[in-house]
Amino acid sequence: QVQLVESGGGLVQPGGTLRLSCAASGFTFSSYWMNWVRQAPGKGLEWVSLINGHGDGTYYADSVKGRFAISRDNAKNTLYLQMNSVKPEDTAVYYCADGDFSSWGQGTQVTVSS
Image (cartoon, rainbow, N blue to C red; front, side):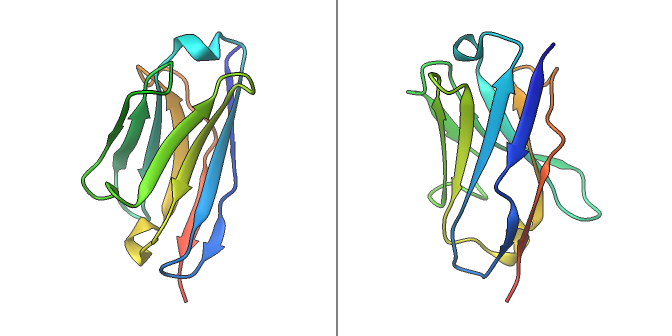
């Protein structure tokens, strides 16, 4: 069965960096576009970023463009989100999901605070 497991969240200071990972199993990872989605406290889901199966096509929400970078290692069946210059408004639970949002991980908490 499809399984997505996020890791790498934690507490980071404003302006700091963090790298999230999403380990995938149970499907042909390289064939799927993959998303990062986040949910801030008390708010709805916000799409963050998308990457194609080859990793050479990436897309970002305006709120993170220029600060975050999505990537993937198909040999390791792993999706990444490099978060740079983080802001308090980046505080959220971050989820990875497949291309059509049919499968989701359990999420990893990111808190940006001094």
